[in-house]
Image (cartoon, rainbow, N blue to C red; front, side):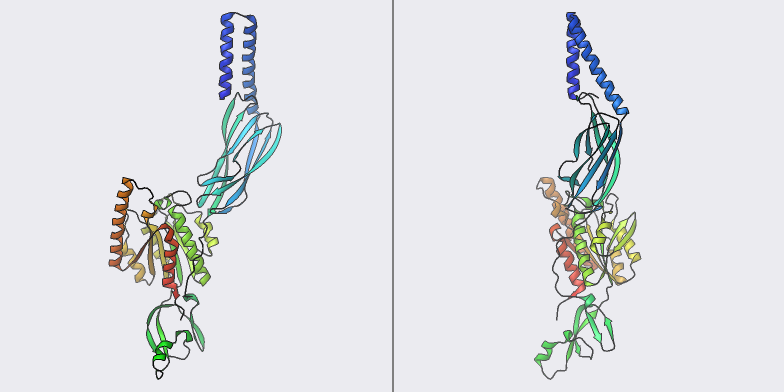
Length: 423
């Protein structure tokens, strides 16, 4: 393959050769013929050098797991024997990765025993598993007359894990830590709704004594606040993995907001002593992972958003595996004309579980103000009002959240089920 310069040189030599043929000048004829011969010889040497080429390339990514928004270094090593060529190596970056420092390509002048390397830095724009496929190579001679392009396959994986948003202050006492202590043993219960006031019983916590009621009438016996007890043993954040969750610009996709908010909630639940987990569909089956957010982040990097995984399937599979009374929070988007099967949600309530639906407001992801965008916003607004009306008729808690308010909405749900005011 001729380079741009190679085409120019060849056309120039052919022009002089034609002029020499027409002028019948022996000197011009011999000179132009010799130059054409040297040009051809250079091409033959270039081809022979490519055949003798013994090249190996390696890529080393300094971090196996990269936190979303942070950078890491990549080192590329090159070894070659047997050829004298010029080489340009370009590391092919996957989508969602950008350069943060230096270049991912470099030019080399190969020698018969060549060994070199270079380092550059990359930054992740989205979470997930990134696959580096290989290198784009360009070989050319020292005169830059001939060139050829090749692809050198070399796969490397980098798992980008989400970064938790800043922790949100929560008020109240976690029910997982709120204990009613009796004299001969401890009973761990979680408080929920206020019921009324009853007579004080030996062993009741002093925090539950109704001091204000007793202060109104000194003759009244000691009274204690009565609460309805609900045992919620586990908390699950069901993360939708629909294709539409991948909408949005890099680093600001719907799934990025959902994952960050979910990890933030799980982090708080983990600190408060609850058994919290993340549930999502993996190849048609529900997958539940427990543990601290740093561990869960690594599983999130393997989340597949290329398959059409419907929320109904996620909830149906999750319902089958739940054994203890649990709080289930589904984070999803529900753009027109998707619907919610409220009949399946009632099954969770019948079994004693608490179910909360938190939907990303699609309107908050629409920034343009053209005519088509305004029409879409009107459709989505009407769809949103219809869903809220259906949820109220079934007694299901349904919330919509803008992208910047998602973490706060999540913590509101968490507070509702796991916190009581400090007496």
